[in-house]
Image (cartoon, rainbow, N blue to C red; front, side, top):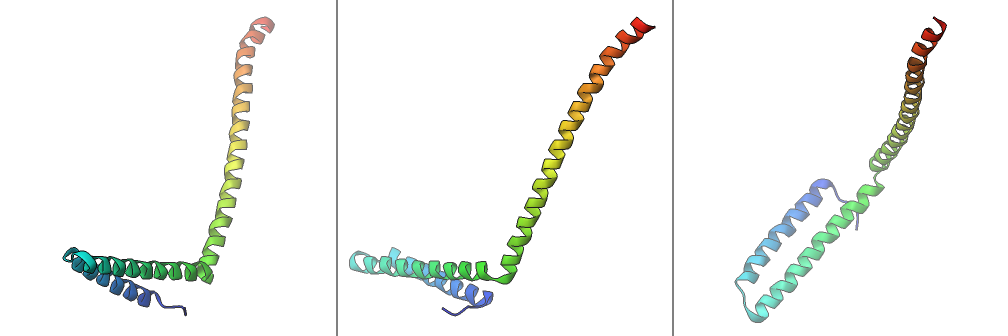
Length: 116
């Protein structure tokens, strides 16, 4: 299938949705073989709608703007992971420093009393 614009895709989906609604109404008012035929019609319409969504998806993942956006998001995620790792290292350093200062705080009174 050749690529279509977003507006053409929306128009096609709107048309299929309208036909699905019509088919559902007819099916709900049908019995026997007619109801079976309308059920089959609904299945075909829904498959057509799914095919349109699939086409839109496949076109979008090959779009250069989409590929560029994914690359930018990936790069940003890597940068944020690096920042998070640095923050964890900084937090560990601060915790160690706090432990050291806490120990110094406990030792200093004893030293000043002893040396004092």
